Length: 221
Image (cartoon, rainbow, N blue to C red; front, top):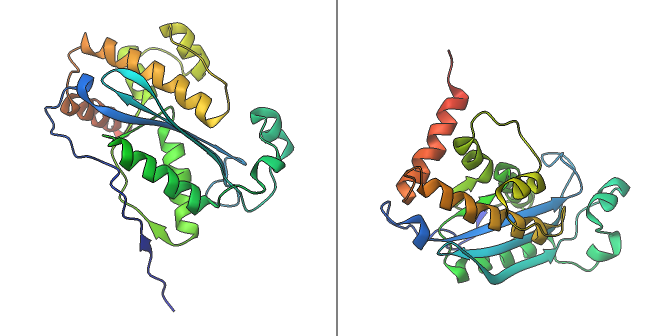
């Protein structure tokens, strides 16, 4: 018997015009914490954190929830994140938590997702929904790593807190979803301001930057 996926009908992208100024746009900056990196296999979501950014400002509209994973939280993850098993025992299921997160995005009328290594966090969301046979229309996402690489292409990859120190932005609680989302949000705002000096002013410019990076990674010489 074939099972049809249930589609979650949340508006996660307000579909702004391509000539919309980045300084006028709202974004959702988010982060996840998991039981490990084997997301496609047995590891799962234990926390989601997000913050609403609008008009080059980090707002006070935030989202945070623990998530009850299928298994136990490994000791090394508890040491890293300070999230213990009792924090998640009565937490929402992954589907419930993700739907609450999606509702936050819809309510804040976001123009896209921002993250530090955002592909991992979007994969976490996607895999958790696949496990319960759900799908969704993924909004555009942008990675602070790509923006940093555009500004400083010769840099080696560094830790989020190190980037915050270099760019003079605030650091919040590390290895917790909301803390890392807030750290990323302040970094993202500073990066957008510096990108303006490079002529990256509109949503179209940001999309070109993103796709230019993707093409470069896949290029063969």
